[in-house]
Amino acid sequence: MSRARELPAIVLVRPRNPLNIGAAARSMANFGFSDLRVVSPHPPVWREALDSAVGARSVLRGAKVFSGLAEATADRRLVLGASSLKGRRPRLPVRELPGLIPGEAWAVLFGPEKSGLGERDFAAADAILRIPTGPGCPSMNLGQAVAVVCYELAARAYG
Image (cartoon, rainbow, N blue to C red; front, side, top):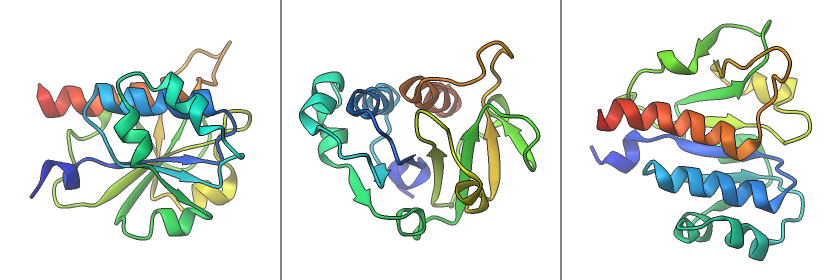
């Protein structure tokens, strides 16, 4: 099995800021990820996204844009929705992620900057991937959240 198949697709759901798209792409490139999918983006200014994606232009150029979440994850057998929020259905702490999920085509969803993933988005997820944050500032920047998840996966993959 190829390494690309083992790594998850990173799915940005309704992102509004091209700089965050660029930062997410850069985080992906830092840790060896390349499958970026963007669902219903706020009309992004891709030039700005490219400017913030230092070293990751190939990730952005290869990004696929979808009109809906079902379309973006149709080829995935497992979908995890990233969230810092407590009280949702079963949560998998990001530190407890299995290194790679062998044989599975999977994806990790990240929500829009202002609101995070909504209930409909979570309904499309098989499980919630919880990023533990402090109670005083529970919401992370989109690019930072992607970096945390990609780091945890890369740390296990590369040892």
